[in-house]
Length: 224
Ligand code: ADE
Image (cartoon, rainbow, N blue to C red):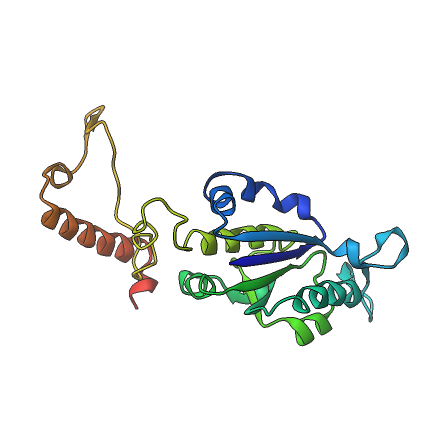
């Protein structure tokens, strides 16, 4: 899979891809991630990429021309399954969206900044708009990092234990059950007996029950 991220702040985005699971996925060539600085696509002085909004109002807007040039340079080289815009008024990200996107070959992610992008960018180029939650970030970069993390960990071969993404919260519409590790008793707090029993049928049954109880208590909306 190839992910191209278009941003005015590539430096804000690099570190999540430089550690742990995402770095390993890149090192193993399971995913390619490319950063494109919108400023490299402007002819204006001082590398200007934003301007005041027509009609007045606070906040700058990213201009269409450099974004057009960047997206066009990419789409001339290969086909993209989706051109995604990160924005608080997009569709709220969930596991189902990430599962779907993980099947893509090539995607572009455009990060908004300031007041966002000229609406004509959205009308002309964008095939999917995604929000990571009902709050406003300073830009789409952190949202793009979250989106990439949720997608990349699903790619075959990325996680050591192939089954481990399947047992994540949300994969079966439920929250994950509680987990424990050694010691089996700490300051009087004991690990549930069943997990020490070695009876895998019972353990599986207990985990399913716990997943239901947890979902009922914490996220009843998922059961509706
Ligand atoms: N850009 C600003 N806020 C955002 C959000 N909540 N999700 C995605 N991109 C954003």
